[in-house]
Image (cartoon, rainbow, N blue to C red):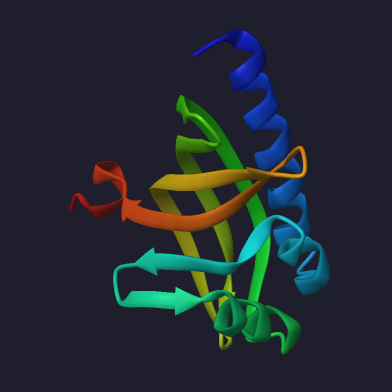
Length: 128
């Protein structure tokens, strides 16, 4: 990974995180492709389902930080591995997440947009 590549995805993730913390479904949508899915502990969430939850206020974020650990580019596809921490509420219940995120991006019209996000709880988050 070159320093420029790392910095490029750090900037993309920082802007995407800002849209998520702003709870702005329209701004979040600018970072994902129509077929984007989020894979988590309880299954697969479509782009539509995620954005509807944000727009309705059922899912809100109060903070989000990330640390890019790996970026691997294969032609027009990038696989980005990130440690993410965030806080928020889901249907009125507060949460704090410490996760590893693997994001798959495609380059379309000179812009990197995400097609898949897979979340794995960090070991320190699940250790008792």
